Structures are given as C-alpha cells and as structure tokens.
Amino acid sequence: MASDPIATAFSIDVRSLVDLQALCPELQIITVSAGERYDALCKSSNPTVKARPFAIITPTHEAQLATVVRYCSSATPPIPLTIRSGGHDIHGRHVLEGVALLDVSKLNNIRLSADSKAVTIGAGVKGASLLRALDLFSLTTGTGWCHDVGMVGWACGGGYGVASGPWGLGADNVVGARLITPSGIPVDTDNDPELLWAVRGAGLGNFGVISELRLRVRPRPRQLAGMITFPLQDAKTILGEGLYRMSTDGTLPPNYTGEFMIATTPEAPIMIFLWSWIADPELDADGEEESIKRGWQFLQNFKSLGTVLADTVEETTMRKFQESLKPYMTTSAYAHMNSSAISQLSPEVVDILMKNSPPLGSPSAIVCHHSHGQTEKRNGPKYRSYPVRGEHYILGVTGMWNEGSTQAFVGEQVHWANTVHEAISKTTALLESRYWSFARPEHCNSLSFFEEEGVAKLGALKRRYNPSNAFPAAFPVL
Picture 1: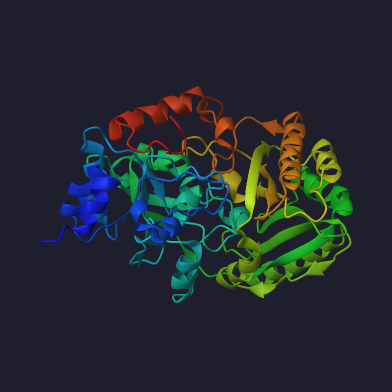
Picture 2: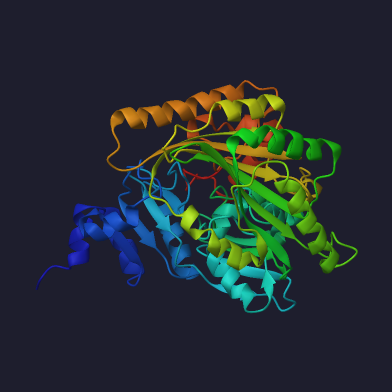
C-alpha cells in the first residue's frame, strides 16, 4: 500500500502534528513541503518579514480551533502558536520562525443581536465584510481606515478609525468576547468583567484565542467623508493654527475624525487628510440635518486653513467611504516603521514634520492617528486596558521601498524614518504609553505602556487563563 502523503510530509516537516491531523481529518495544516501553497499562505503584508513558521493551521469553526489550541498546548514539549487574522501587523509578529501559525481567517461568521444593538463576529472577519453585512440592515459600526484589517486585532489592540471622534476607539466599542483558553475550554467575558477590561486593549492572545467578538452597532448615520490634499508647506496653519488651536480651546467638534498622512509627489511633499463627519443623535440634539450643515461649514473652515490641491469629500456611508480608500490602502511595499505617541501637535512637533518630509519620489510616509471627542469620554482605566489616555496623536513614521530598490535607496528610507522618530522622541509632547500595534518590538515595554498597576492586573489574568504562555507573540508581552 502506498504511504499516506500527508503523514509522510509531516514525518519530514512537523512530526508533532500528525496526531492533530488524525484528530481533525478536515483541518487544514500546511507545511513547507507544500511549496508554493505554503509560500502564498506564509506571505506577510510587509515583505521584509522573512520568518517561516513550521506549519500554518487554519481551523474553520470553533470546535476545530479548540482542538488545535488544546492539542498544541498539551503536547510534550508544547507547540507554541502565533495568531493571524487580517495579517496587518507591519512588524510581522504573527509570523515567527519555528512556531506554528494559527490562521483564524476562516472563522468569519457574522451574527446580529435580536435588538440590533450589537453584532457577534468571528475572529477572521475583516472590516469591509462587516460593513457590507450591516449595510443590509441599515446599520454600521466603527472600523479602521483600511478595508481588509481584521476587526478583532484592530479593536482589541486599540482601534483608531473612521469614527474615533464620535464613537471612540475600537476597544471602546467591544461589548463582549468569547475566548478559547489553552485547555481548549471557552470562556466568556460576560462571566468576568476584568477579562472584558483586559480584552479592550490587551486581548491579542494573552488570555486565549478570541473566537468571537461582540461589537456595538448603530443605525447607519448621515456622513460626510473623503480625502483632502494640501501642500506640506501649509502644515503650520492646518496643524498648528488649526487642529492645535481647536484642540486646546475645546472647539474641535466630536463629530469630526481626521487622520493625515505626509507623503511626497515627484515634485513636492504633500499632506493628505482622511476626513470624516458623522451626524450622531448622541451628539446632535438639533438633529442630523443641522449636524450635516455644521459639517459642511466645518469643512469649509478646515479647507480655508491651506491651499486645497484636491478634495473628494461628499455625503456617503461608512462602507462606501472605506471602499473608496482601497486603492490607497493596498500596498506590497517593504517597510521600516517607527512609532510614537504625542499629547498634542505642538509647534515643536509641527516644525519637525515640516522639516523632515519623506525623501522626494519615495513611497515613504508619516501616518497620524488622532484620538479626541468620545474617545476621551471612555478612556478611564476602569473601562479599558488600552493605555493611551486623553486626546493624543499616534505617529507612524514609515520608510518604504519597492522590490528591486538599491541598497542606497533602502538605506536612505530607513535612515529617514529613524531620524524623524528620534527627533519626535525628544519633544516635550512625547507620551510614554504608545500604540503597541504600530510600535517596533524593541520599543515595546509593558511597564512603560501599561504602568505597574496595569501590568500586575493583566499578569494576574494571564496566569489564570494562560499560565503556559501558549501564544508567545501576544500583545502586549507580559
């Protein structure tokens, strides 16, 4: 009789997983021996990530997930797992050498609650899929700017996005979760309020694998959204005399969410705003029509701060706006990112940004996430574990290059990203806590991010639910 090809492959690549395949014959386990199929599944969104897990395991339902987690955790020695949903970690921490990659992308169920106030999503659901599903019921929820970001990783790691101003961060909109612990036993945050607190900002593998997440949903609002482009030379008036002034005097409307990117054309550096205004009944006592009028007026005031090179703002929906951003959010460029958090766009910071634009003609960029409005209302340490409090800005300084770039060009991009990061790190606006999902691994220190009390509380929960540290790339590292 011919030998079993799967068993033969495992005897060469990952002998330890043969019994797992026997337990779950339908479970997809791909190893290096699968060649191009393995390479395609192993591919990272950032091509600089070269690590190759010894296996990629893809469960399709929760029972399979529980079996995988229990099997790997109880093996002798234990088989460490990393977790991938959308795969958007620019530093590739979900792909480690010699570790089994648990790909949860097939856990993509979406279930609306009976009262239409919450939606339960599987671990693999992405923003675009969720918005399309909710659109059928004239509902929506906050998502990231990028259409294919995994919702669980986005929300449980913080979650800056299209509706941060009026609705808060992704973590603020998590109302519950179901996790598979290393024992294979599911736990629900409804039975442990402290676990819910932890999931809202530190739930990426520390206490188990999230199989389902419950998010708040809302009736689909009227919304103005689009992209506005200015020359970078206008940054002083737009950021300094505009956003900085409105932030400090309290006149920045909570309906507004605006995040910007500093990039270059072949001729000059530019600043691109992703601009959104949401009419929301919790914020607008005078109704949505008046809110939309105020939004148009705020847009005109905003545009008057600089010379508008392009403006695509229109009345739209969350789904349509996110879909319109697809061409700008899809890239296969190599990247070296540094990240900082700052309390304000102070004159000192604006000056650094203006003097250190990306090298002309390169794909490098500075991305800025802005947190204000309702984010501040739900930022108490008792509500969520996510550590960055109050109004703040997350700067992602990313040196980028394409395949085939010369070493000199690559070196220029990396040097630029490091130089800008160092300059920002010396400003008085710098915050110690940062966005773990953006920060380089060598810059991630749990004590500085979560402080001693937060680390102690998170550590106690981890010892209760995941004492074997079954997921070595969990965020944060405790």
